[in-house]
Every structure is written in C-alpha cells, then in structure tokens.
Amino acid sequence: MEIAIATAIGVLAASGIYLLLRARTFDVILGLTLLSYATNLLIFSSGRPVIGEPPVLRNGMAETLANYTDPLPQALVLTAIVIAFAMTAVTVVIAMREHSDLHTDHVDGEEPDDEQRGGRR
Image (cartoon, rainbow, N blue to C red):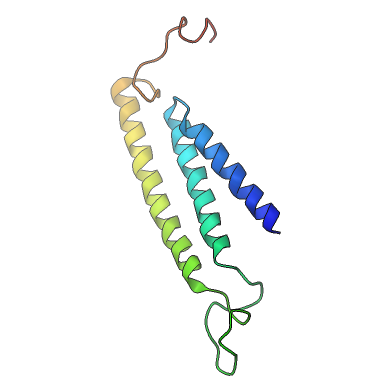
C-alpha cells in the first residue's frame, strides 16, 4: 500500500510541476491543482492512517497509537482543500481577466511566433 501511495504522490507532483512549466494559463492552473492534490495526499499519508479506527480517543481504550488515528493530518488536509479551492478560484478569475485584456492565454501575454515554435502550429 505504501508503494501505491508513494507512486500516486510522485505522479501527481511530477504532472503538476510539468504543467506549471507550460506557457498556457489553463495548464498552470491545472498544474497548481495537481500539486495541491499531491501535497494533500502526502500530508494525509504522513499521519499514519489506520483503517477502522476513530480519530479520537474512546473511554476504556488504551491511549496508544494502535487504537486511534492521528486527527491532525486530517484537519490539515481539510484546511488545505479549502485554501486550494479559494486559490484556484482566484487564479481562474485572474486568468479570465488576463485573457479579456490581452486576448491570449499565454502566460507572458504574447503568443510565440512561428519561428520560435519551429514553424509548427
């Protein structure tokens, strides 16, 4: 299970970084979203999730790590989801404004000409 989670975090982080390095605003927004998903999964998996155990202490149970799941990473991930949603909304609004002002979705505001792209379209 650890290998699957580590692979998922790596794929999400690599895809997010790749998309962040692209020159289009939609790619940058999607890259930020994937990078935030990878970060959330990393935080959540660092909390040693235990299947079937509550995140709070119960009466009559020993206060050991085997009897409950640490609630702090869960709270951090919930907070990070809300912050990432707000950040994505602000970024989309800024990208829409940039597109309406500059009539392009290129990050630096200028479309590369055919010579810079190698004659391809």
